[in-house]
Length: 178
View 1: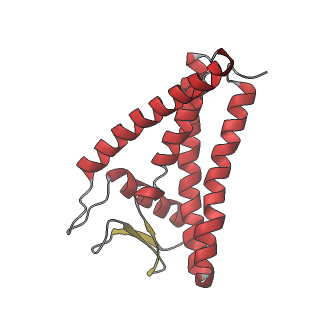
View 2: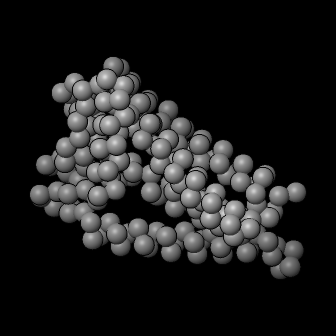
View 3: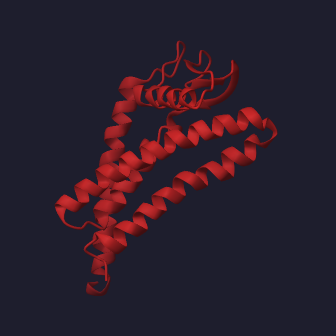
């Protein structure tokens, strides 16, 4: 057992952090979204959609975000065309929870852990906004590529960013670095 002590500690810290943060997030979702008509997405999902519209407008696209009337999502429109939808899974919170759980499980100093978890979360959130905007533009321009873009390219962007942040954390800041 002593031989695997670090692995066991890592797993306990990771899963404890993950489940605590996930429980908090689930409670928030239960209280902030309405899953029957009239549908209402959680405020964080609506905020992500609105910020995506702001980014698209910055790049001179006529964009809009509207609560979908028939499902729990926000419709993204570009030039008046329904291009994409933002659902709860698109708001990056679940990925941020996974990121933070890993950072805490491989913790460094308390200060470094808190700062890196915060800055990494902000980075992931920002990359996610850019990713959704880019996805919407690509689907608008290349609608026949929607499945490839949504299922392969865009998960690679967000998960690649998280993986890169984890590698930097372990190699530069974690107390497990060698």
